[in-house]
Amino acid sequence: MSEFTDNELIELFRNADMKHYAFNLLVRKYQEKIYFFVRRLVIDHDDADDVVQNIFIKIYKNLDSFREDSKLFTWLYRIAVNESLSFLKNKRIHCYLSLASPEAMMMKALQEDTHYDGTEIQKRLREAIVKLPKKQQLVFNMRYYDDLSYAEISDILGTSVGALKASYHIAVKKIEASVTAN
Amino acid sequence: MKINQSIQEQNPENETLPPILIELRPGADGINTPDGYFDSLGSRIVDGIANRKGASFLSVAFPSVSKPLLWVPTLAAVVAVVLLVFVLPEKKAAEIPAVDEWTEIRMAFDASYAEEVLLSESHAVDKEIENMDLSYIQSATYTGKNEPTQDEISEYLKDLEIEPDILNEH
Image 1 (tube, one colour):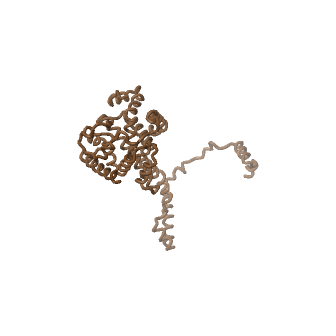
Image 2 (cartoon, chains in turn brown, orange):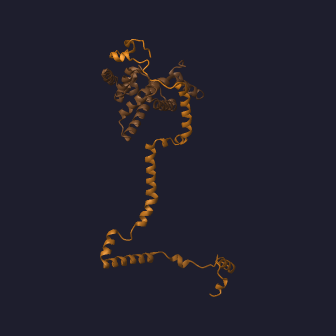
Image 3 (cartoon, chains in turn green, blue):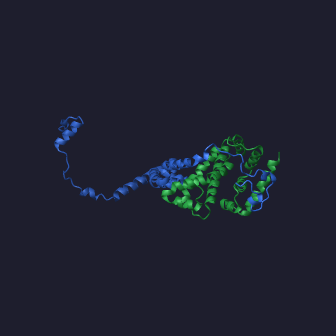
């Protein structure tokens, strides 16, 4: 499955006869990374499923015009970030229309998440992350869970490495305080 | 994710994480998915692409349809041009009063002024008729061509259920 490099997958995708095959390989290669990245942001499995499908449909539509200025996986992450934030923005608007607080809505989603079986301390960690501002959440998740380097995160988010380090540091401090509070 | 690696190895950029976060370092963070989710995700994505291809013929044929920020102002501009060119001038022409607003007001309050205005207007109309080229009337001659025949007239009257004898009355 992963014997194909990203460049080989792009080449295959650009060959009309191999397009679907290449796309299938690409989905299999990145589906879990993208899913868990999105899921940590949007919390609910069904929401994550919708967002992930939209992300891959966008990738399918735009891969032909991918210019290879950046690495394929940073491009995928960029699409994932944009789609997730756009989903959360729409959800936020729905929250305001229904006069509910978006944070309360997210916490409710966390508590009602049926596809979650973490320990008590893992739940506290999850709640602490959800309470962070979106930018800090993104940086923390990419660094802590996905092991991306600051250079890669900088490429994805278009933010300087220095600013990212500061965001991560603040996020870690807040999370530590929140998780160890009880 | 290499769970057993030391934090130093996982963090080449030398961050120090608090012990609680080292302890919770991912591997299994409690998030899971329905059984077989990733086995079917690829095929559902491909189905989604196929469905969208069918549904979005309009947006493929006219790419800007899916971008209201582009087509709404364009549509508004087209409507405005149509209104300006075709609808409003006709309406304007129909609504132009014979005299201007202030003259109308003065006419309403001053009968003699009104009479004067109307007289001068009719005088202007007379002058216009005088100046018209009516020579074509003098040059027109009656040729008798295309006159209906007696039979045609009778038939026409019959259609109207009028007795043809009426012609004899004149």
